[in-house]
Length: 638
Figure 1 (cartoon, rainbow, N blue to C red):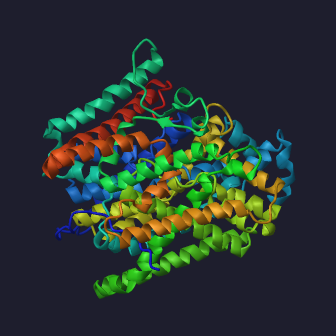
Figure 2 (figure 1 turned 135 degrees about the vertical axis):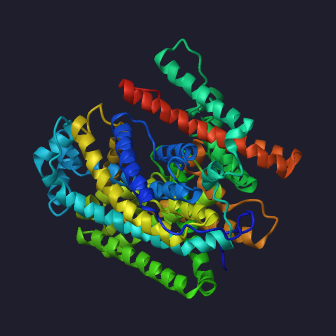
């Protein structure tokens, strides 16, 4: 049974365009200068002010660069390809400094040693730290969490060296996979890449967005609404309408069985609405259908008596386990589709590109093996290391595929059933405390797929293919830019953490919360060790099986309306927090296409590009105001 991923509807392959001949020196200088400025700004805003810039699918600083570059294009002596090339390189190299990159890693480097002094449950793990690439200098550890100190770089040499190599190996894996998947996703399956719509529309001289009233109307709506929220936070007498999600379950569902709903988040994020409008209607419908089905499973379970704390039934409907299985299967299906069509893809390209693709496949395999070797070197058994990396690669690949088909403002994978958790559930008897402590530090990377750049690379290759930037040029500069971004990230982030203290109220609390989750997960498993988590594995198998079945039905039955990406997303934060933006965008899009046709739909894109761009610009503007005035500002996201 061959269950390849379904093709998405999309315009036909674009005609060949003039290609970017080379990167001019002033373009390269501009890219690296902006990268340094953005990395500094991101560290300052996200660590010191809890204003998030690069966790979105559309990163605020790079979109601002694109907007300003479009306005100043002639003065900067940039053509459209060069402007977009800079955007792609910046976007693909910044994730490594954020969540799932070095941000969580830093806070975990001295966590057990520091908190063992006040929380005795960590004392038993201290003997296992000696062979790990973490902070060992007691004074450097205290200063990191308490603040008010310069960075003791000598104490950080080993952690920076080891974890930089690990993250760069992962980046090499994503670069190799991006090269291999490019032709299949962009030309063969013709995926829509909703996230790429705004950069392409914004820079297209034929679209002339700035002359369209609909664009400015869409732009003005988030500017006004978000500004009122920011002002209301300072002056409560100013009226404002809440846009970020809040739980309405306590107001609607107070009696059985409806009170079994875990939550019902209602939000009206303008950026999320705009991005959802670029998603094919069939995909949006599938996302909404499976989100509703997943939510209804809770009251249905309550009606059947499937509930109760402290028992296996309390895990019903095994949401996190289903999500893990769905993401593993979705990534596996993407690789299976590549394997099936590999011979044809290789034969359809010139000999020079054929050699390049084979080199990229060797790069991906070599980086994967080297990353596993690093895990084995710190005491993780080879089977567990291989399993964790394989599952993590499937998660990241699924995230890239989801973004290519359903957009999504965030790329959130399964929250609780991470790759480490899945392997511990499978091989619990082989996981001792030494392995758990080592896993706990790798967990800082594997807990969040937003720190990995494969989704951004695939969107960047789509943009490059559209305007004529060779994929080899894109990936080569992404590789170079990743090294500089990583170096700058360590420099600016450590300086900020040592300035205010990672464990103080002056620092972003989210980073500490995620580190707490990882370490507490390690402690929970060590204290309640199981041989094999059969109930959890059944949930994983169910999620993987249903995803595979949906993909098979989608390819075999032309009339089948449900897309597997809807099920893959339904048990993640991406849908639980943003179902309303999907619903609004889908409803408007269906009505526009039904009663106005494609011509009206194409004209309406300007409004939703403006809605998305206005939300990004006004949030960044208020962040700048907060920085200049040195005052806290309203948190637009959470």
